[in-house]
Image 1: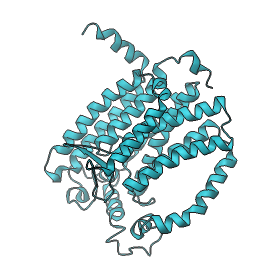
Image 2 (image 1 turned 60 degrees about the vertical axis):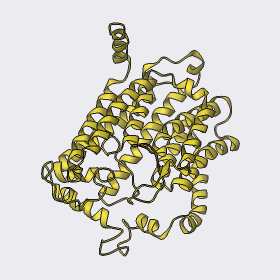
Image 3 (image 1 turned 45 degrees about the horizontal axis):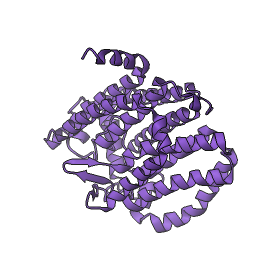
Image 4 (image 1 turned 120 degrees about the horizontal axis):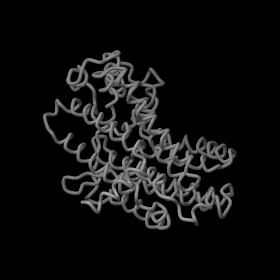
Length: 381
């Protein structure tokens, strides 16, 4: 034990303990609210999974803080293979569908893993490595370079959509990709070209890829003629807004929310945990949750800006983009201004894969601060 003490002191001194503290506080807050959300289920399973995932997550934060990310990045081909294999496993007997019908989970005995959550980490590392190489040894804005980057992103996103049909996760990957190439300095005209290309293929995608129910879910927040009675497509959003409104400033109290405890609020421990917070703890708690997540986001960006290294900066911005998209999309769908597409609230929603993947990701960010870069990487500016 005495031998480990110097290493522990060194870790506490060099790692980003502020970032870890913010994430742990958010997760504990989430566990408390989840305990209320699942009280009507009369099973301890959800709390056991979430607490276990938090412990694993903290361990992963420490591990990814001390591991050299550049060693992983140098083996980018293995990471890409890992991404592909993990998604393809969904086609095997290990894959199973969630309650939305999306084949998005792998089952290993009693343990379930969501590949789209785990894969965000190697996706960010490989993309950061690819951009750093192109930026420093080729031309980032050449047609070939942009084509390589787009191919990497669209291939992974295409696999996710084709196999798991998880549109929510696909959008997270796209937002991470756009944020990272923007942070790297890709010229504006490429974004205009990309937007024009997306506009050109959208009609085909809308008509031939998305089914009618999914199209209605996307349009429902903006088209009052879709499910005007609110008994089908709008049910989740309506119940969420009722829960948030009933909480007012300070809430009805834990375990006392009418929508939550009567099970009128769907997916209350995952997609609509923010609505549980609003109903039972009020607007004050919602603001605290939002500020905690904003603090985590700004801390990731701050570490990235201070890294003075392209690879490190891009990893930090990729992780920040991940948290940004999920935070604003989840809160948006809870208050009824964004489509309900199954996006969880980082650190607060129930989900083992989501929680320990998020801790591993912020561990990467902490690692950017923790380790001095080898000489060959200091030139990547």
